[in-house]
Image (tube, rainbow, N blue to C red; front, side, top):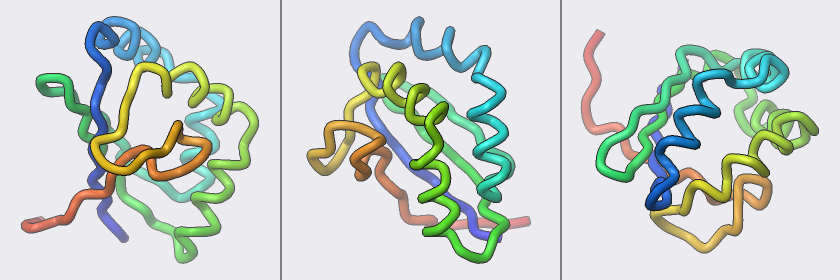
Length: 111
């Protein structure tokens, strides 16, 4: 199992809309995440930053992430959510183009 932490900025004034959307994530998006071997996916907020944590239980991460990126319903979800975010690093214009959420280095873990 691979643990993944990522970070992105939430645009000023976007908190209410972002939390409203994530209170009822589309089932098709959740199904695609699960089919791509992502488990225990959580998003946290602090002071304009979003932190995502997930566990990958598959054996071909790049292929599974490509499946998520190719899913039409997920792309529709991203088109609604991306305008509420901005990357902390890089210059991507959105999830569909990649380089949106920034991977973080794990420096400590205990079970």
